[in-house]
Image 1 (tube, one colour):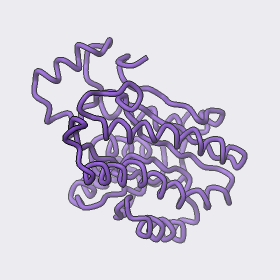
Image 2: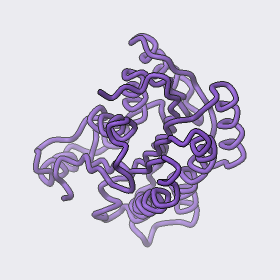
Image 3: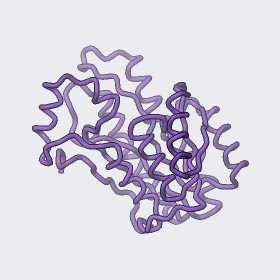
Image 4: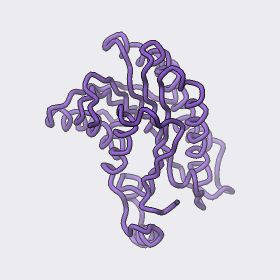
Length: 248
C-alpha cells in the first residue's frame, strides 16, 4: 500500500514544518523527493539529511515559487535530469496577519504572490510532463481558515480559499489526462507559525477543536501521501480536512 517507488515528487517549501514532514513521508514510501526552498538552505539540508538517514532519496532544488521564470527553469532542469515529474505538492506559503484596516498593498501582494501565484506557476510547469506521461498528482495545501474564515487573517484566508478554486478547476481541466488535483486543508498544526502563539491563544484553539489538541505535521503529510498514491486514483477535485473537527 502507498508504494511510490520510481516517482519523482516536488515539495515546495519543503525545508520545515508540514513541508519537511511531507518530504519525509513521501520518501519513506519510495518517492525521490525534490526539496524546494527559497532561502533557508540550512533547514532544507536538514530535511535532506533526515531523508537520507532513513534510507530515502532526495535532492535540493532552490527557487522562489513567486518567480515564474525561476520556477519554469528549475522544473525543466529537474525533468531533464529525471525524465519525469509525477507529484507536485504546493506547500510553500506565508502568513501576514492583520485586521483589514491595517492591511497594506504590499501585504496583499506578497501573500498572493507566494500562496496563490506560486501554486499556479508550479502547476503550470509540472502539467506538461505529467500530460506526456498521462499520470500526475497535484496536491495543494490550503487551510481551515480558507474555509471558515478568521478575524485578523483576511489576506491569508482569502489566499488559501483561492487554492480551493484552483484545485477544482485544474481537476476538471486535466482529469482526462490521468492527472488528479486535490487539496489538503490543515487545521492548527504544530509548526513555526503556531509556535509563536501565546499560551492563551493556543488554548483557545484547542478549545475550538473537538479532538482537543493541536495537530502534528505528520498527520497532514499522511493525507498528502494518500492523495499522491495509486489508491487515490479515483479522487480528484476534493478537499481533505485534517483539522481535528474544527471545521466540518
